[in-house]
Image (tube, rainbow, N blue to C red; front, side, top):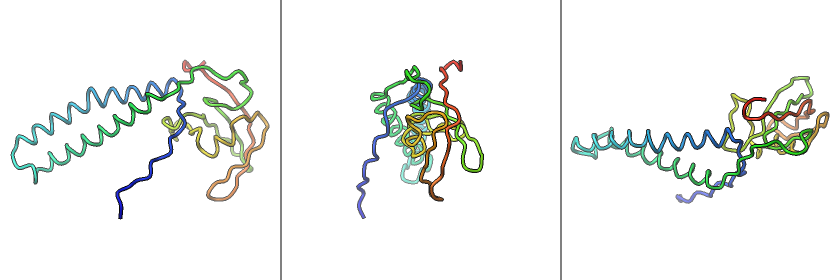
Length: 170
């Protein structure tokens, strides 16, 4: 067994202004607030003596490694991020940042927003632009039909609405 891990393919470098702001806020929180708290807790646990059987110390060190790993990841992502702040010239077509309403064969409508891979949020209906559904939607217009291969077999959707909103909700 080897420790080698194949590097994950880099996702798209695009993000909405809201997504970039959330990433910067997470980095700021981890670096300025959370990491110093955990560092103090580890120092207090280390002062108690034998570190080999000190669960607080061991857990704190593990937590510091996880925080540092996430901080490295966020810094690397933010360095190469392309923030998209305005809608495309042709707002009748589906591109990055679009809210898209689609209808399946049974007449069930869903609305999704196409965002960057760092912004995925199923609760808010944010779908990565790298997903099969978003790739199939890119460049489409209202009333276009798409077919997406899903684990249960191919599904067909019809685009019923395409819209873009600014970050202020206009």
